[in-house]
Image (cartoon, rainbow, N blue to C red; front, top):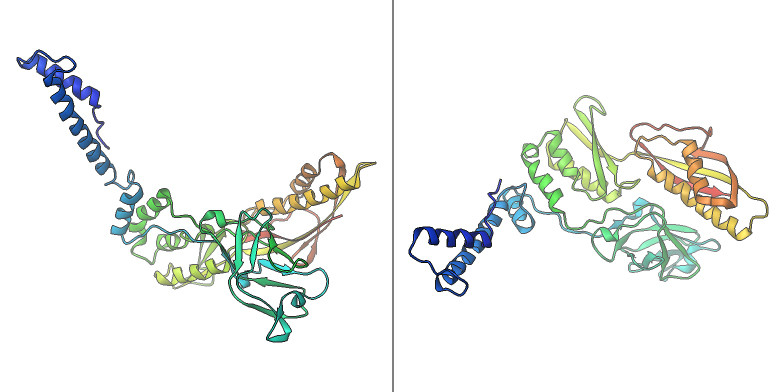
Length: 379
């Protein structure tokens, strides 16, 4: 705990009072030599006190900040995490190019092979307002007759500002007859680590440093940008084994993060004998809904309501946490709130889980499962 410093005004007042009481110097008015000397000396003493106070504060973990905190962290062998740009790999099945009619290979032909198409690195993909821009990062070859293909991308800028929500990337600089979208959110962009997070890692370093314990594994995995929390499952596959369930920031974990998580586990001694980083179980949800418009409703208004209802369904499913229940009444409420006065009622016609029809009722998944919007139909 730091000792409060006297202000410059208080130091001057105390010095003048001391001179008046204990010396023969009596002329201490403004402009006097004695007063000028006291104020000059006290100014330097005050500056020195402020410097010493700052040095003292930045010596302790709870009060250090900025470069002083970096020095403390580096003494423990921990460096502050640098900023990185968001990305998605081809295996994530996220960034999708597609055509409604014809063949995708006709829009992106491969000059070296007439039987296949290719999407080259550098194709720009962005939000409608171009505020977030990604670029394809590798050649993606595909059969010329395909109507859709997934590509790897990297953000053109670093930090959390490169993260983007689902279905936001809808523009590109390729052929105009080709559609593009991101089927899932991309949330692995990272801004330079904050003082608060850095302090957490430093403070827990002693518990994690022996390795082989739960803390060492949790700390290693929580440094991944799109992982919100870790759930440790001991003896998941028998005695001496464990699974580290990665709870994502959004609905899914990027495949790159999953690979990095497995490497992080292997770099520390196991919490059990054999450790594995695992994703949640994804339940792909298809929902079909019919809107019943008010009598005399305008066609344009009903069309807008359909899009609003679709967004409401996707939004509700994405708010259900891992292991959370899908509540039909909440789904209905979300849809009704989105359509306004143009619709007098809705009917949920069908719900399918992973391609299989399901009774229209509340759905409680397992604790390690999460719902993912798949096909949303609004009629």
